[in-house]
Structure formats: C-alpha cells, structure tokens
Image 1 (cartoon, helix red, strand yellow):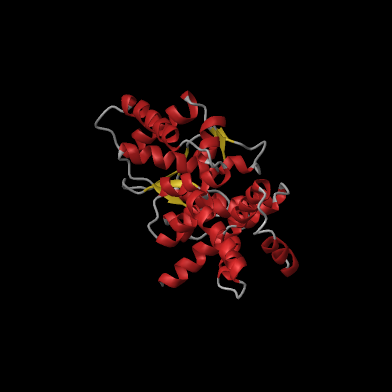
Image 2 (cartoon, helix red, strand yellow):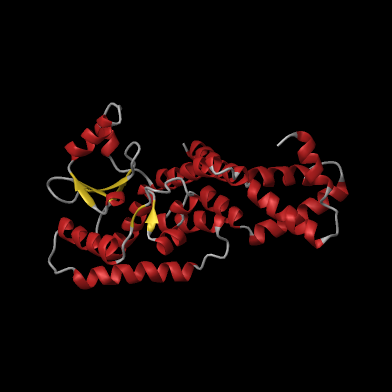
Length: 282
C-alpha cells in the first residue's frame, strides 16, 4: 500500500457513518499486522484527534478480529496444532463453529476406536483410520481443484471431504492424537505426509492418496522423481510452527492465483510474524 493510500484510509477514521466504519474495520482486519502497524503509528502520531480515532479502531479490532487472535497465538509461541488450524480457518470463516468442528473430530475418532481391536500395533491402528477417513467418510485429495483456498481450512475440509496433502495429514494427526497413536508431521518437499517411528521400521502415510503407506526408500524415490536431491532430513518430523507456517504459505499462493490479493497479503503477514517471532526467540 502506498503512502497516499494509507493517508486516505486514515483520513476516514473520523467518518461517523456506520457503513464506512464497518468497511474500514474489515479493511484493517484483512491487512493483518500491516493494518495494526498503521493504526499504531496514527495513535503515536502528533494529531491527537486522529490518534483517538485510531485507538478506537484498534480496540474494536482487538476485541473481535480473528486476525488479531491469530497474531496473538503466533506471538505466544505456545503452538498447538488443532488450535492453530482452527485460528487459521477462522480468519477466512469468522463464524466458524469451533464446537461443531471438535465434535466432528471426536465422532471420527470414536468410530475408529470402535474398530480397533486391542492390542494393535501402530500400523494396524493406522489401517483402521484409513478405513474410517477414506472409505467410510470419503475424504480424498482435491486434485481437480488443488488451488482452491478452501482446501486448507478445517471446517471446509470436513464439509467437502476434500483437501490438500497438508490439510488431510493434519486431520489425520488430530484423529490419531485423540486415539493416542504417536504420529508425526513430515514436511517432505512438495507433498506433506505423516510418519510413524514407533515400530522397528518407520513408515509414512500419504493422506492425499487415501492413506497409502510408504517406506523411507519409496519416499526418497518420490522426492528424486521431482528432480530434487533426496535427503534423509526430508523424512524427519517438523514442528507445529513449521506445519502451521506451511498451511499459511499455501494460502498466500492460492489466494494470489485466485486474485484475492488482500487475503494473500494477510497470510503473508502471518508468515512474517512466525519468522520474526522465531528469530526473537533464538
């Protein structure tokens, strides 16, 4: 945003129209951290009237904005996968019913629990999750509309039963966590998967291909087929921060190609916040 555009936004802060106020709140919310920075600059500036109006907008945004909640979550460094994915999804769908989403996850896990015959090793339990998620519920990769931003949001994935590899893998992890199955997120190049390291020989699960199980060698062959130099580090678990950042990175790209620049910029802001927060910690 140019200086003239920023000045034009700030010049409207004292407009008494409810329509203008609603539009401005929406604009600042979509701007994410850039919007908050602009308002904070106005608060600290020499124009006391402008400062007062800017502080009122900041107060309103901080009380109702999903983007603000997401920024606070990032800065807290207290990263939890389910919470983070819900917050990312609320940015696009502010009316998302968190309770309904959690109940659906509980329902899927409960169905898996019914079918798991104890004792069962990790592979056997994962085969049950595969049956429930990909056959009974019909979840699958959305290959025909891969760049649709809805492929990344938990509420839409649960509704459409379609998603990106990372979204379906995250769904898988949340179900497995409810069942006490120790699985890990694997940020392999080009294709996010799940790893299990509890057995003598690790194995990997491709949720985009309906739970296809792969060996480490098959994973490395897949990476090599993408004209990349395979490295054993590609098969190592990634952190919750890295997982959530990758979801945001996908959204930056997919919103950009769908000509939704403001949403792309918003998720760019989250990515920048993840990076800056991490750098401050280390």
